[in-house]
Length: 166
Image 1 (cartoon, rainbow, N blue to C red):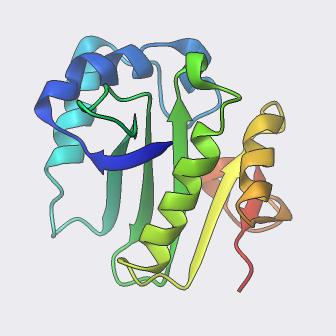
Image 2: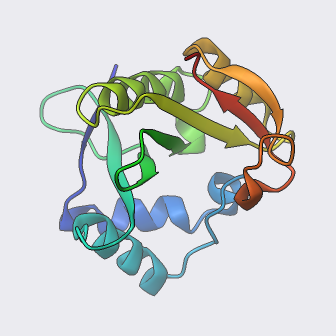
């Protein structure tokens, strides 16, 4: 149904179309982006610096097909370099909501994180106002572990914390 692929400079229009929509970013720790913000986000996603303490690997979510279709979402894994755990995230265009796109992207992220990145634990957070995201996480095997304040995820205030089983 979908693949995760590397972002390309030509993706700027699609990236901006996603990151400039309040209905897409309202539940993320991502601000509503201006064109310049979207360009910086894409640039930063393309140019990962090995000297940064945090690594954020961003991928485009695109339908499988030929010719390659434009992206329908963005996703990624963030982790502290050298750590054995990471956080997954995803955002999908509203036109693709309810079609299994986020679920499939989350499965690919888990395969990537546990496989290629060699992580031992992957977590995610979502706000209570976004029960669809909680269902996505549960479908791919995450277990709800309480609120972020209960699990010391201080950057995600008021969010439900989910972890993959160890």
